[in-house]
Figure 1 (cartoon, helix red, strand yellow):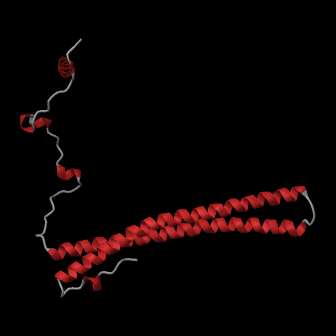
Figure 2 (cartoon, rainbow, N blue to C red):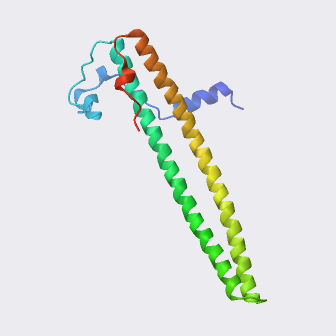
Figure 3 (cartoon, rainbow, N blue to C red):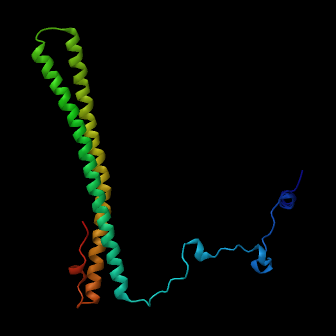
Length: 181
């Protein structure tokens, strides 16, 4: 039986792992011809302005404002999608109810074919009403998540505005940057 240390050494010796040479040991023709700046589609490095608290809060408030705009747009899109789905379900419900009314008015008495059709339409109505409830619940859950994100973004936006106005009482950003719609 082999000792576990010998087995480990054997596996290590048998492996094909080759150590990587440092860049200074490599030949120059092995160095890739691209630079880091080319990989991020820049031709020259960006020059950074000195840090200022004013520009920091202005940029942060603009980002918060943009995020609020995106979330508002998402809420509107989800509401429109919900309305569209519910409208389609309502149209199907109206069609089923009108067919049942038509059968009840035209075919008075006992007719097995008509009764089966009315039963099928009643089951269809039940399924559509269930689908309508499911759609409303799913839309509510979806919109609740977005509203939660919106509330967090709104709180951050108002907090940044308050902090900026506390640091710069002369310049009030709340008058020049309002949330996007």
